[in-house]
Image (tube, rainbow, N blue to C red):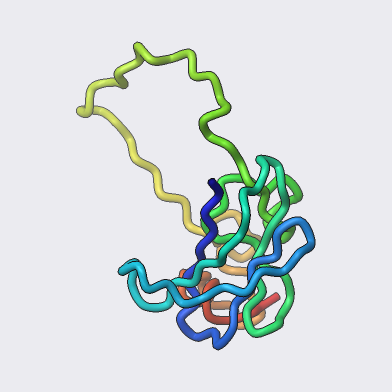
Length: 134
């Protein structure tokens, strides 16, 4: 089963577009929290393109998508994680001392070291879910 959901607290209407067909989404009452939307979509095969439309706007990729085969501005693509045959079941990781965790910010590799949004502000989860920008 494929589950689609998106956090869009400021939207009045949200649709999932799956393989070119639109499915109305409803505010999620499952306890996920305010602002979450989910649709009733029949089973979707792995490799199917999809996205979300907020208030009849342009098709937006899933901000939590595991696969963006056509780039960050293209549609998201469904993926079946269980289809991958893992070969490293015996690997247990390295020791915690000496481990490095690296956090990459969106503006790190832009020409001026900042966001390329017209406003110049940083990209936030709220701006992804609530606003449309180029």
